[in-house]
Image 1 (spheres, each protein chain N blue to C red):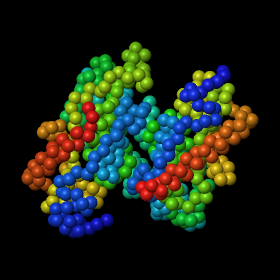
Image 2: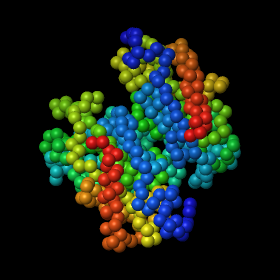
Image 3: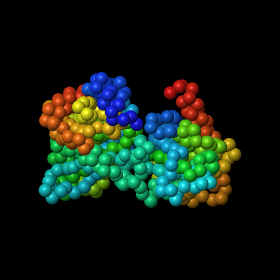
Image 4: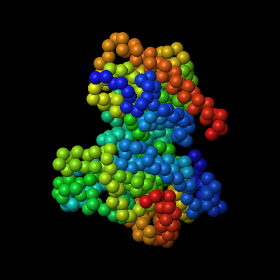
Amino acid sequence: MSYTKRNDGRKFEETREIKAEVGVIKNAQGSAKFQIGETIAVAGVYGPRNLYPKFLQDPEKGVLRCNYNMFSFSVDDRIRPGPSRRSREISLVTQRSLAPAVNLNEFPNAVVDVFVEIIQADAGTRCAGICAASMALADAGIPMKDLVAAVGVGKVGDKIVVDLDKFEEDYEGGASDMPIAMLPRNNEISLLQLDGELDVKEVKEALEMGKKACENILEIQRKALKDKYKGGK
Amino acid sequence: MISKEYLISILDKKTRVDGRKLEDYRKVEVEYDISKNAEGSSKVRIGDTEVMAGIKLEVGTPYPDSPDEGTIIVGAEFLPISNPEFESGPPSIASVELSRVVDRGIRESKALDFKKLCIVEGEKIWMVLIDIYVMNDDGNLQDAAALAALAALSKAKMPKYDVESGKINYKEKDGKLPLEKMPVECSLAKIGEHILVDPGIEEEGLLDARLTVASVGKEVNALQKGGNGTLSIDDVDKMLKLAVEKNADNLKKVKK
């Protein structure tokens, strides 16, 4: 089935409108809110702080711990509060997305905790969470070699597209969803998952489109971080 | 963390660690529709304390002893993002107590007309699921949670339900929730001989006794005494009068 025009009128390589803000949770060392279309993620960072039980400590390098959580009312059909198999897997891939950007060697035996809360969901929540989390880590002053930008790419009907919304994910003509995260400085991929069906050429095409989108997201993340310190907030 | 002696020496001067008077409530702010897939949602700030609440509606089976009544289920998550002391895991006893006191404020004041939440007697009822998320803890989560729940309820819309197919259509709305009363909660602390309103996080850590009062006008619908210290009858009387006054003030922040 040919998908000639996107549901919300976007170009195929265009993301939804993005809003980013830093310093949204007062108690946290660092925090950020990242909104893409109708998906809203808030991330907060605590640490480096002591890690218990002690056997979890690593004398060589610090531990990055991530927790992804969707609010029960963030989707139409209420989610039972507390961890699920899905949320645990996303916590894991979030940690892997961020770890290559963080200089873990600088805080041996300690832990940096990253909490990602999805307040409102319209697809792309793990990517929005990763974008918020990387900003929150930077806001917390955690030493990093790059920010991490993330976006969903994939195929809706017969078209390769960037940033699928819920309508597109559920498209009756079929959809494939491939969330990616990148360290934009050297175009390093730190998250790559796929649900659906893409051929080898399409994966390459989608990654190239995702790379461009991540560069754009990085600019928005940078601006939000700079704005906090400029504004004297 | 400050010492209790120091805290009491400040209270002796009729002031508080954050400069408030003993009977002052912090600034209260209410925002609506913070999450569009919820039937109703809100964000409440009391000073730097921030909580979010959302309402979801599901269809369930009534309890055998109330076949023509819907019900509410209140839950609270003390997110570890909100306080470095909170840990991930099953709900703590503090979050269970908080959600039960919110539940009693709504239930006992008959804020929601449960009979109007009945779809088919003995078979199908609406369950109103109220979930509260703590985003930033700077003390007095109880009052923030109760106000957030009320604000979310006040704006909530019923989804369309088709009895034949048994399907809920969350995209189509079918009027407001039957919210008949507006219960508000006020928590007070006794520290030494002093009684103070809306304890901040440091005061909470050092208080002798706490009292939460849920009320509608002058009717008191739920009380919860906390802390290991005790209260005199005169203390309770003074606290109730203050609570009723503060609850009337905070009610003005919620749009019906």
